[in-house]
Image (cartoon, rainbow over all chains, first blue to last red; front, side, top):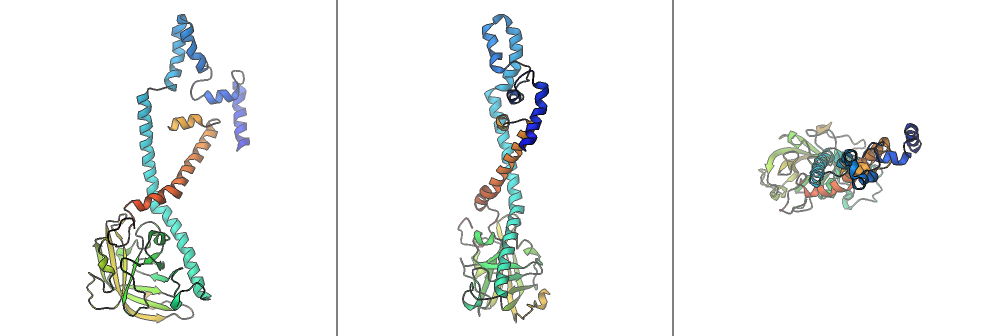
Amino acid sequence: MTAGSDADRDREEQPAAQESTTEEASKERPVAEPPVAEPPVAEQPATEQPAGEESAAAEAAPVRRRRAPGRIVTAVGVFGELLITAGLVLGLFVVYSLWWTNVIADRESDRQSERVRDNWAHGDGKDQGPGGLDTEGGLGFLHVPAMSKDEVLVKKGTSAKVLNDGVAGYYTQPVKSALPKDEKGNFSLAAHRDGHGARFHRIDKIKKGDPVVFETKDVWYVYRVYATLPETSKYNVGVLNAIPGDSGREKPGRYLTLTTCTPVFTSRYRYVVWGELVRTEKVDAERTPPKEIR
Amino acid sequence: MYGWIWRHLPGNVWVRALLSLLLVLLVVFLLFQYVFPWAEPLLPFNDVTVDEGRAGR
């Protein structure tokens, strides 16, 4: 780079060599044409030689106008540049939210999923919590063929820190989620609709009767969607109850709840999908998926 | 503002253009790495959970 730029400068030096030293010339060029007298000198003739005012002013004026525009003009110019900058920054923020966060989240969730699979494959039980469940690294994988052909890693918690890694999280508050292995209860999950992996982006494609399969180390839990709620208040925590509110069920059972935000690109309301457990299936040696997701 | 930066960059036009590009990339990097992740939770675009009215989820 330096060699190239030196060469550039050398090439320009030769024609200009007679007029001035190269460094000065190239520095001043955008302000004033090299042949014009240097700015400090240009101002002096006006005071020293009143007789030569006309010619001196003619020479100095263009220099001065470009040098020091009026204060208002400068202020308006800077203000305009700030507005343009603000527009560019907002545009960049859209790029960040809808593209870059996905790139980061995909990378991160791939890494974490791989680690969970690794743990399962050569399960030394080191990182695993009670009951053979690895609750820190991830509980298991959610398969929703109606929404996406990709699996979604499920981890504990619904804080931004967890969900921003492109995973789904099960609620720990305001209503504590049950786990799939529990006899009764509601396994409630949240994930991003846009950005950060957008794992539940196509939640609106899930229809009543669609299968949802949750995969753990040893068991496939097969759920069937029995109700959806396309729009509800973000304060409607009742949907997470052990017997999910607004879903139409009144008896305790083994339920699954998916929540995300709606409409897309906003967080005005929540979209909720409920399923109930149909059956469980033991994971075999080849991890053959149940027929619902084959 | 931008004119001021341009005038204060060293070198000829090409060197300045290159330096400007590097400055732009630096600014974009800082925005993506630090500013946007900080600003995002403050904006109402990505709250996906139901909760009891506490902000900033």
